[in-house]
Image (cartoon, rainbow, N blue to C red):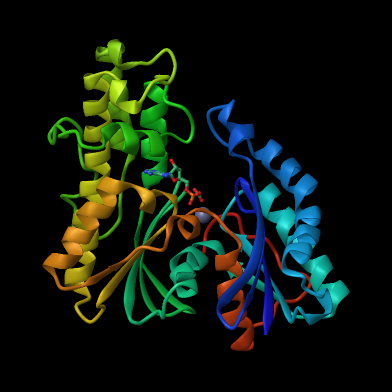
Length: 343
Ligand code: KG4
Ligand code: ZN
């Protein structure tokens, strides 16, 4: 089967073709520069931009892959969670294409797609644990198959990426700040008791990052010298030492929280021999190192999809969509976008 995947849940407009679990090609347009001016994603602008780009990206994808659209056997679309206006653009284009091509329509959970994206690069093995860490979500799952997910824990407030992005914004680092926190903090020893690790003393696997955000805000208010006028122009090593230590310390509070909770999940699910870590924040070097160590301690394999598969993309939607279509899943043309809930 050849499956077309569409992804418009946040600020990437993306389409991809997958066949037999392998990527045939993709077309992607990022809105990062558009939203950077505002320091975060502006939903109204995001949906307009998807609307402007999505259909012509489909044409570009066909050109790039030399694909005859008549050979497409299913259309999969990320139906949520995400921004409603953005999701609607993808869902409606998918309906139009499925109708026009006369093929099945399959709605895909965006979070599940992130956690099975590694299937494009390697054989997935189950049962496994999945940690999804992005700008909007922090979810921990047990996965029995690419289609069978049990939610073990989730953030009660802010997502891990949101905590990093908001902390970065407080010291005037550009959006999306998580990446800059990672880069500036690299190779610097964090102050381990400067910022709190949320919810780690409560039993269970839910996360909380809003306390960290408040604590960072108080710290920055007390140390205004941390705030930058603009990003340093020279090499990042030229950034002030205090700012670099601040970044390392914020990063450590997030990374160590993820390490503790993932370790707890691994201990509670000893039959799951691998931990898949996905979402934009999985690119973070300190988080990777701490999670790899937590896995190694327990003889569990840590699986990180390559960076291009960690951030939002349509290849992951097409991959999971093909699996679901082959398993017989079909949605009607009344398929709804689900912006929140049913993680
Ligand atoms: O999965 P993603 O591309 O979009 C969604 O949120 O769905 O994730 C974006 C998030 C942002 O919060 C961004 O700051 C974060 O991923 N991010 C990073 C790094 N690269 C991207 N966070 C920490 N370290 C990084 N290297
Ligand atoms: Zn995502």
